[in-house]
Image: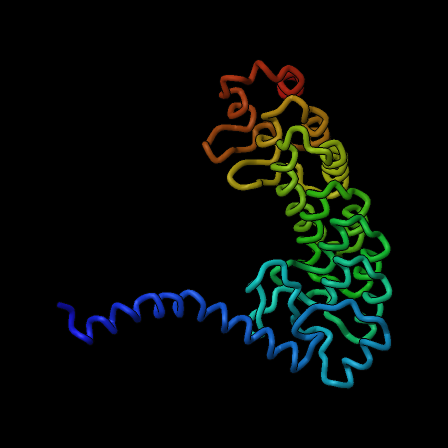
Length: 277
């Protein structure tokens, strides 16, 4: 015979279980509700026209504050925003909203869970937005993210435009970031962006990348030479001064390293380039 206390304990088990499951969700929903009441544009990202923005500013809205572009329930809260008003306006491709936010001091270099505004503009190929943001002193983290994401999307014109803007001292590092990120993209056989990415890679090699650079753990030339379709890129690197006698991480020269692969003979175009230099 169960005691009264035991019966009460057993009866409370499902109630406690439900509380454990739903309490965190209730807290998140409460935070979002409070945020919506305190400052709606701050809590939930909105694309605002001039009148709406000015009204929000009078109520204390800060253009560079975080906001919630919710994609899944619980992804945002007052304590943890995942976007910014500027990024949200760019994602919605609203040129006027972007201009308004910039005029009121929105930070083009502000990051969020969903990235940078320039990266969003580049990935969409919106040259007008890219130009607008580049005019606001883009810094290396935002620029490099835009180069990687724009290249991944095959937006070659946007990426080329971004590459034109850095100071000379920053150009080399940005080109290195772009080249190393493109290596893996070039192996995505069947990708609709592949031809554009090869075109972009060739542009980068011919204009700004160090031909002997290393994309850890190997040199750029060694990484590209695994695929015969990359023969034009290998030629461009060699024409720019890539050194086949440079040392690889194995201690072998690049030439020796490439010859050591069992499938070396299956890449006749690249083999001809390597043996002919």
